Length: 119
Image (cartoon, rainbow, N blue to C red; front, side, top):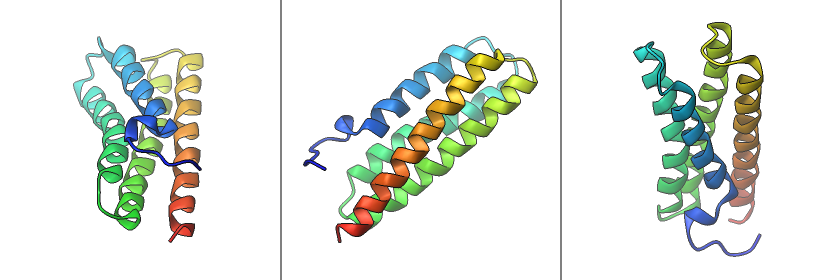
């Protein structure tokens, strides 16, 4: 892994930024405000915890924030099942978003493993 100078270079951050945009697009007109606020907040948490952790002083702190981000990715993934079941989004959209969440989860796990091994 080459040296990364800014969090904007991280593939998981790039994917999470895309995820946030898609969430806002998907639920812009959703009248279920509780649902909308929850999924938007979880999406923002994915993205912001990556950037906040990157900006911390140690790999251990970064891993802690990546773990939170990973959990929020799982939350968004789960909420897309709810969105599909309640017909807020079509099944194919929900499946695409869940796949994106899984890519973020997998990438986050790999980065956490790398940070732990580079001690």
